[in-house]
Length: 214
Image: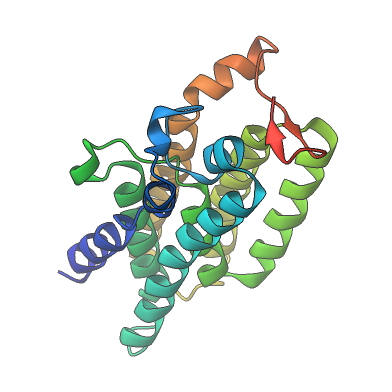
């Protein structure tokens, strides 16, 4: 029952589409421009750096805050609290990616994943942040940096959970791995078009001079 509650609560939080609502304040539907989604990179591409920052932090916080709330609410269940955090974060990502009131057309879930990462492990947060910044600075591919972050998340969670870092019961480990893999898989699925362009050398690069992609 706790899992279902966390997943549903997360999904409801994920419905707060920062990019869509910010766009509406500027009288546009951001999903009709650029890459056609309501996430941070498209907000940056369509409306500039300020919009990108606002949308990122909005989507980041809508994941971080409910995940932290779950840590507080279920603090008396230390043997499964990190699993419940994963379910909550996964729910937020699903709500962000597939908002029912927008015909299930949302973003790609990376900012929401970042909120989950910070709520889970600050060490992983630092590693992901450094990796993302370096990759984007070197390659100028935001999508590549995002996919690397999702991969680090999966590897980190599985390795450290297996070492007992998150206090999970042994019988919960397979479920923990599966949910972590689903979260990582969502990032790759939502970036499938980007992956195709990366393979063929046609992916959009970010231009640090203008703050927009090209």
